[in-house]
Length: 544
Image 1 (cartoon, helix red, strand yellow):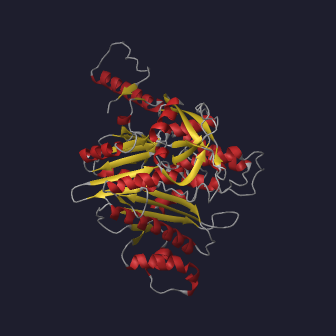
Image 2 (cartoon, rainbow, N blue to C red):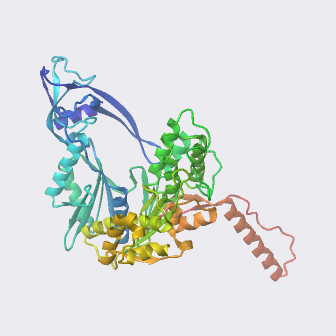
Image 3 (spheres, rainbow, N blue to C red):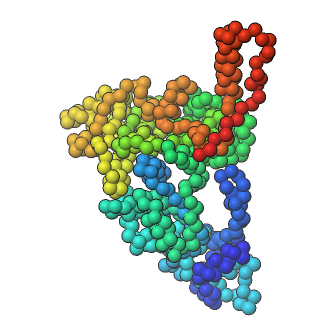
């Protein structure tokens, strides 16, 4: 508490003044938290003074509150590019970030408990800079940081406002901002260090070194690629739901099974269902393999039943056996491939279709979606076409983002679809009467196809990777799709120690004994000496 209070005083956050009779005075409280490392060990104890923002009055104490944060797709795109060109990736943390924001409004706050000036107990704090808890604090901090980055020569992206780029003929530096967590990557390590030093002159910035833990996502990198996973987050979720000892499953959904609003009985308290499904939704940042299952569960948040809760447990049992799995990025060609699909009239209650797509930059999956369509499609062609339009919009957005990076695409984005009718509709200049109800999507797709901003091609249904985002799969087919999405277990060369699974050990023992027997037969060995015992456990120690 003393450290926090000293930081506030050093920053000039407020000054004491008499209580104004016609002004509203905001209250405050102390909040305590234990910061932990990815392995669960304690990093530090933290106290923070937080203003009670719910006491503020709109139009008096604050006006605008919106503050942008970087999109997960942008983060994955930048990381994929950094891996492609072997750029360093640094992580920064700004201490007491919100305290750097300058307030435009006139805000008053009571003196913090435990640090009230004994000689002037009736005075209040006139806030000059933002404080945690104020509704306008995120916006004030982001405005201050963006102004500083612009002064350093960066440009704010017009596609994602939390991305800042510095691109010249010989240098590229990208800065991703998520509140007070910052990722920096670029083509020059020395230029990155110089930028970090410049940022330290303005803010209390900590250089956390190479990217390792960002927003609950663990990042581990070697010369071959980058692995993103949420092992700690998933383990904590399994502990909180008491599913740590559950039997693992090979697939998060059942093939052919559809959830309904009317199956089962209502849960007496839906709070736990809502919390767990919300946590699973955050897991999809690095786990596209559960996107379809989570999308289905999210449709029953308002009134869940016991059948829906059983489906939640199935997803948790699947994650139990796949805790160390996550996205793997490796260097590849910079081009965009899109796979889109739909499940026509798949919803049992309202017969709406489910759209799904996956977008790859080279071999790296950077964006995906499993989403219920807003209107009922009258044909499978219409459902596929709407899914194609949704995927096109996302692909075009990514294309604009890459253009801001001043990177060259070898070819226009290619959209792979397994519906012949949807492909014909996208390429046919004649607008038939039977497709008038998809006119907006039609004109959007036609414009992109005519301008050759995108290419549309046919793919066999059995090779359609987006199928995993539209319907439940068998375990064998699900594992096939998961491998194609580059969702892999943490590579052995990134692990400090790996215990070989029992099946692998048994296989090695059997092979060893067979070789020994064959050797004895070839050498006409007549000794009765027993072969060595290989039944002890095997542990492989690896280094980076």
